[in-house]
Amino acid sequence: MKLIFKLFKEIFSKFPFIFIILFSFIFIQAFLNSTTIIAMAPLVDYLMEVDENKTSFITNIFKNFFQYSNPGSILKLTHIMFFIGSVFLFAGIAGVLTQYMILVVQYRLLNFLLSDTLNYFLNAKYSFFNEVDIGKIVNSFQNEVGKVAQAFAGMTRVAANFVQGIVLLSVPLSLSTNLTLYFMGITLVLIAPMYFAKKLSYKFGKLSTLTSSRMTSHLHETLTSVKLIQSFGLQKKTIDSFKIFIKEHSDWTIKFQTLNRGLYLILIPLGTISALLTLFIAFDLGMQLAEMAMVFFAFSRLLPIIAVFIQERSTIEGFLPAYEQIIQFRNHAKKLQESKHGKKFNILKKGIEFKNLSFTFFGRNKTLKKLNLFIEKGKTTSFVGKSGSGKTTIIDLLLGLYPVNENKIFIDDISIDKFNINSFRKNIGYVPQEPQLFNMSIRNNILWANPNLTDEEILNICKKSNSHQFITDFPEGLDTMLGDRGIKMSGGQRQRLALARAIAKKPSVLILDEATSNLDSESEYLIQNSINKLSKEMTIITIAHRLSTIKSSDFIYVIDQGMVIDKGSFEELSTKKRGAFFELISKQII
Image (tube, rainbow, N blue to C red; front, side, top):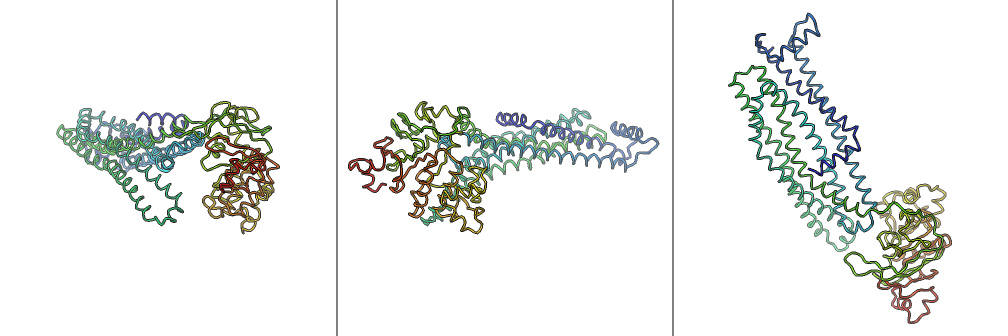
């Protein structure tokens, strides 16, 4: 419960006005509900034609108030009915407004948790996403955050019911303290076993969260592997496997929801039994009929409140594992937050240098070993080597995706850790091997990188990336929708659009991570043609497996097992008959 109260404190500080309105409605509703109980006294006395000397003191107060506000008028049944109906109506309206404000709080919390958690994730170092299960993250956003919002709304309802319960309890306590204590004692005895339900609720809730994460993780993996699954003809096996995860999650969720919903259904009859036993005692003690009616009506109004209180408390216990999972992710992301401080990077002046840099991924052998290299401004520098030699890791470190020791990577003779890393990234255009295009129009994919572009600039960018021709062939041109991950485009078209998006940033440095390795000859030619044009405007870094891609490079580094084993221009390296570069060519590795 400490976690929920911590969350309550955090949310209250962000939305105090909403909570003030909410608690105002709660107190108004509680007051009106207690008034409906008191209003029963004059109604019973009037219907039973009780002698004026024996009427309830509540009835006498009501008569006196009526005659004071309506001098000379006689109290009639219609007046009593109108008063009771009005109080019930206003109590109902207050109840609706209270529920509305609870839902406002719930969805404000949902918005806050979703956006704030995503903020932590996206501003964490890239290593965060390598250390956590992406399926669990997706499940946290799709399901667990919603559960936390529901639990918080439940806690708000608990608070509302607690306040109403105290106010309603004050009525029978003022009428008959002993009788009220009888009711409370009998009720506590009957519902005592329900207290242990919270342990089961927490257990079922934790297993529901765990199995939901497993199911979502498996679904995420399946949807990103559809092509592979269909190519192997293993659709049935995949579906059968998914059914196991669905059943496992369903079994625990059914137990969790049955327990929480069953509590309410059991508590109402148990409470009714308590009220009937108390009513029998009241009759035996010879209480006035009006007072008995008020006490019984008060108890009948209290029963649902007690039932909801216990049910919501159990529900909160069950939803706590969902919040615990989110807190774990958030805390992990907090520890890995990227620094927002440092010198602002504007433009590359001299070049980028790696000095004696070594790097190791957690749990793996050393990836880079005492690496020394220089990427000169305005030149095209290429990295070649066998798969797994460390080429992509060099790019990842240059982008600041993984932390390195101080004074290992220098930008214009200044250590990279002295810069605000995002200001540096904003000056880099990046084209990955697998272009990640978004499910929106071609225009919006380009504007995603730079929203300030004019249509004329977009057109010029498309020409530079050799994508203008195929775009004009589409009936909708720049407004053509690309589909999920650009599925409606061919591989070459996707790669050229990825290049257009990269140069839309007007970067100082353009990085091409094996941008042509999976393309046909024509697409490769068009991409390479674009690169050759762009080399006059910016510094270009390429990772390549194809000979044609690196022929026009100004300088080439040959990487093997995390080390530079050869370097030079294409002409220099290709003439070394016993050199590492020549060996790569002869073995057709490049």
